Length: 115
Image (cartoon, rainbow, N blue to C red; front, side):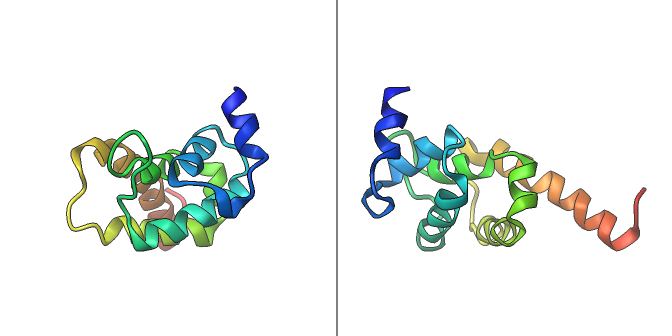
C-alpha cells in the first residue's frame, strides 16, 4: 500500500489522527504508535480520523491479544479509557465488547485460577 509506505517515512510528531489510525489498522509500528494513540485517547476517547467518531479507538481496540500481552500497561490504560466512556457509540459497541471480553476472562483466571 503506497499510502502506508509514505506514512512510514513521516516523523511521529507529524502524524495526524488519521495517519495513526491507518497505520495501526495495518499493524505498522505498533510499539511506537499505540502509545501515541493512547496519548490522544486520554484527551479525546472518541478522536476521529477520516472515517467516524471514535475510529482511532476502534483501530486500537481491534489489535490482537498478542499485542496487548506484549504491552499490558497500555492494555490496562485502554481498558480504563473505555470504562470511563459515559456512553459507547453504537458503531464502537462490537469493538469495545471484543476488547473487554478476553480481559474479563483473564481477570477471572487470575482471581480464581484456571477453569
